[in-house]
Length: 72
Length: 382
Image (cartoon, each protein chain N blue to C red):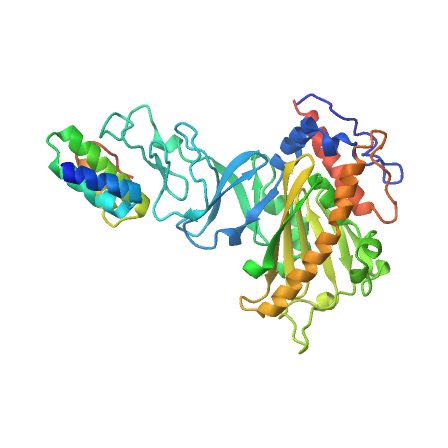
C-alpha cells in the first residue's frame, strides 16, 4: 500500500487522471474494509467521470450495487 | 426598485426638445448598478460568440458585469451559459478556458455536473464512500442555467429570465436581416480583436448609431460614403442605427473580393447597414461579410469592445481577411478619441445631457429614450 500510496500522490501531482482511475481502483481492491473500499472506488469513479473514461459506467454500476450511488 | 437616482423626464421628450441622459448615467457607480439590472440583465445582452466554443466540450469562463459565467458547448452541440458557481459551497467551477472531456468537476469537493448542467455525482455527500443523501436532491441542484440564444453567432443572454423570448423581442430586426440568417463563418484568429476604451458602454452605442460624425471622424471612409448617402434605421424600443447606399467591396491588387452570401438580393449590391441591437451589441451587415461588436461594460467609465468578423464561406483569402480586419480596426480606433472625449466631457457638472440634432441624431436619441424607458419601468416596478 505504501508503494500504491506513493504512486497515487505522484499521479495527483502530475494531474494524471487516467492513472488516478486505475490506482484508486487498485486501492479499492486492496482495502481491508468495505467503507475504505467504497471511498477509493468513489474516487476512481469521479476521475473516470471527469475524464469520460470507458470504465466510468462500470464503476458507477459497482457503486450502485454497493448502495453508494444511484442510477443516472 | 422605487428609487429615483436621476430625472429622466427631459430624455423622454420628443427629440426636438429632449436632453440626453444626465451625467450620472456615465459616471456614477450607483446608476451603473441600476442600469446593470434594468438595462443589461433584464434584456437580451450580448455576452460572447458561439465561435468561442467551437467544439463539443469547450468551456469558457468569463465575468459579465461582475457575474461569473461559464459558456459550454454541451455533448449535443448546444451552446449553454451557466452561472460558474458550484451549487454546494459556491466555488468557481472553471477558472480558465478548457475542454470538458466528461463532466465539470468542482475542484473543491468534486461535485460533478454534466455539460448540460445536471448534477451527476456528489462524492461522499452521505459520508465517506456514500455518495447520496436524502437531503440532497440532485434533480434540484443542477447548474443555474442562464437563458441564452445564439443569433448572428452572438450568444445573447437574459439574466433576469423576464424578457420576451429572443425571437419575439428582436422579431423586427430578424425580419429586416432575414437574408443574413444563414451560416456565418468566423474568419478566425485574424478576424477578431479587442479594444479597451475609457468610456461608459453607452457612448460606444451612441456613436455607432449615427452617421452625423462620419465626415469629421472618418474622412477616409467618407471619401466614398458621403453623409447624404446614409439613412437612419429606427425601430422604436428595439434597435437603431444607420445604413449606407454606397457600400463598395474590398478588393486586392488582382481585383479579388470576398464571396457574397448566397441568394442575397440586389438591394445589397451597394447597401450596408449598421445597427445596435439594444442594449450592447453593434452589428454590421454587407453583401460579403458581417461583424459583431460586443460591448462589455467593465465599470461606469471603462468598456471592452470584442470585435468579430464573419464571411459567407468557411475558406476565404487570409490576406484579404487581414486587410478587412485592418480596415475596420482603423475605423473603430478612429472613434476612440470621440467616445473617450465624451466620457471626459460628462464630468462637466453643468452639462445637461446635451441636445440632439433633430435631423441627424434620431437613432441616438432613440437609444437614450429606450434606456430611459427601461429605467422607468424598473423604478416603477412594484
